[in-house]
Structure formats: C-alpha cells, structure tokens
Length: 491
Image 1 (cartoon, rainbow, N blue to C red):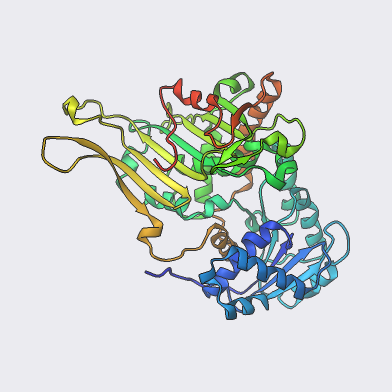
Image 2: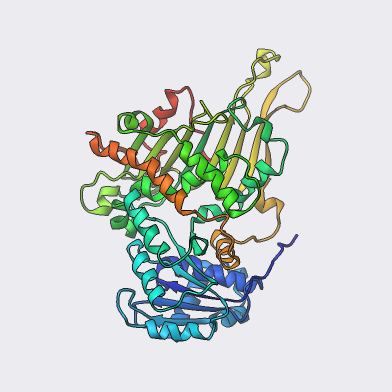
C-alpha cells in the first residue's frame, strides 16, 4: 500500500526563527520529506530568517546535520538532500529593526505571483512586531499566509492583543494558528471514526457514554525550557490549546460539511458550552502537581525546582474535571490529565461506555466490564475498541475483554506524513480546517482564566509527585471520589 501524494502549488516560505529548535527539528525535516515525496515542487523556495550572522552555505550545513539527526536514515536519499538544500537561502534579519528587511524583500520580489508563507517560529512577543513590519514593507499579497505557534497570549487580554496585532496586517483567512496535535493521523481519524461510520453516532451521547478521559503525558522534564515553562505551566502550555482542541473533536456536533468554518463553528460551540470552573470550585475540579526527584526508565532525574534553580508554584501536572452543558453531554464528565516526568510518554483519548443494565451470565463466567474506545495519538498511533467475548475452548462460558485493534503502523504498511508535514502543506493549500480560529482561541482562554484566578486566591500550591509516577495522589482522587479510575495508557 502506498500513500496518495497530491502535489501542492508552487510556493515560497519564510521561516522566522530559522536557526531555532522548532525549525531545525520539525519544520525543515518536514519540508524535506514533502520534497522527497514530490509533494513540494522543485521550484519552491525556503528562506530562513534569524538575527544570527551566518552565510547561506553555513546554514545549509546546519540543516544537513539537522536532517541527519531528525530524519530516518532510510529516508535520507543523498541526491534528494542536496536538491532540497539548494532551495534554501538564509537572511540575517533584525525583527525589531531595519537590518535585513531589504534583503528579504529582494528575495521575495522574484516570486510575487507565488503562494507566500510566513512561518513565525519565534517568541510570541514578536508576532505583532514581525507582522507589522511585514505589512509596512509591502510583503503581503493576496496569496500570502502567516503561521503562528502557540502560546497565543498568556491570558485572554494578551491573546486578544496578539490576534488584533496579527489581524491588523492579515485577513482572518490568511492566519493559520497552528496546533500540531490536530495534524496527527489519529486525531483526523477521530473525525472519520465519528462521521463516516453509522455505528458510533447513535451511542455518542450521555445515554451510552459514562465519561471521557484525555491524557497527554511526558517523561521529559522542562530541561532548557525551564524559564519559559515557569511563566507558563501545564494549563497554559497544554490544556488551553492541545487538550481543549482534542476535547472539542470528541464532543462536537456533526458539522454540515468538512470545511474549515463548519468544523470550527462546531468546535466553538463546545468551548462556549464548557461549564465555567469559577474560583470557588477550582479546588474541587482541578488538581495541580509539581514533580520532585525520582527515576525515569531506571535513571535518576532531578525535581522541577532543582532544574529551575529557585522556588516556584508553577504546575507541571494538571488534572481537570470538565463538564459540557449540552443535551448530548449533560452529566458526562471529561477528565483531562497532563504532566511532565510521568511514567510514560503517551497521548490517549478514552471513551468509557456505561455498564450493561443487567448481566445474564453466571458469576463464574467472569466480570462483564463496560466497553471502551481508546484513541491513541502517540506513540504507535491507532484505535482500539475493547469488547467482551468468550474465551475460546471447552468448559462453559468464560468471558474475556478483547480489543479490536486498528494499529496504523501494522495496518497501513507505509510511512505517512507527521503532523507538521501535513499542516505545512495545508497552509500552502489555504485549508484552515485543522487550524484554530480567532474566536476559538479567545473562548478557550475565557474558560481557562477563572481557573488561574482560583489558583491565585488559593493558599494551596501544587502537590509534589515523584518523577516516574502517574502524578500526585490528588489526581487519582479526582476520579476515585466519582467512583471512577484513570485508564493507564497502553492498558
């Protein structure tokens, strides 16, 4: 089986922050893969922009090294690598000054009729100034798009300020607020699972579903992102964007069509229907944690405060009980859990069904457990549906939980594009379906802000948990007091 490759139109892409980690680890390797698969035209061009003073030849050497480190060796075809590197140009540019802008304008002048993409892989505080300068330099055409990374603001006011600054230069149809989780194969398969199969829609509601769990766990600590992370924390870094977007895809009503505005209209309705967690309810509906020293994979690792080098009340773990006030979901809690230095790296959505109303089987047949649907985003993307079945063999009825397993790696014997590869090509196509709209971002912040306010009013800080565990005991208790338990990834 081979993946279907549909070439995109010719384009130029300018990557601000071109010497940074995101560009070298994800963006340029992603563009190389699309070039190698003939989806990216050979006449496309890439201009990396940064303050650093290096030549284009030196920059190509650093990209060659990055490809060696971040692309599977089987995909590194020497001739293709050299062809791709010839598409790259480097411009030393000061985002807040005049240096380098004439050089960038001159480079773009020869591609005025092409699709033009500005990717802002920079600090968020530069989004507004860079966009303003792009506009004042006359670099915006009808076929221009701009891509901005999260975090979009640190609260509702700052998110609006960023949106207004970018929107002063670009029309909303030109703005692509990227969330790489939405580019994952399994996330898109959730749409196919729900809306291309008659099997699930009749039971996708409070009558059949007991609750939903969304877990995004990491084994890594904050590392060299400690200073950034300390001003962010798990709520801003993961919940406000990635996890609420996943919640929306699980909970949204069927859109009228598979187009950008229809899908995003339904996601906005979910965000607007989230029951506010006001300061008085924060301690009952949320659990904060902060990792202490422990062990990951048998290796001792330091605690968050040791890595940071100072005291801090920033949360590295967060569990939330969210509720959606709609007819479909009334009474169905959505439990969100994310953290660093946890037991394993995984991202999963668990849709837990209600138990059967009455068992006809004898006690010695075994426990009849409720069905559950597990959508695994990483690692080993796939979907599992856990059903009750008879254990084969003589000796009467013995019941056993058995998974129906759709493993993408095993079922589709082909390499499929990763999230950034797919989303970059969607930007070129002008397809905004998998990107956040302005009102989505602001609705998410509207729900998150009262939680932040409640924490500020609270006398309690985050609960310590050992690195390598599944978080603080309070995170477990959040579900236990509802008579439920977390489903650990992979089980």
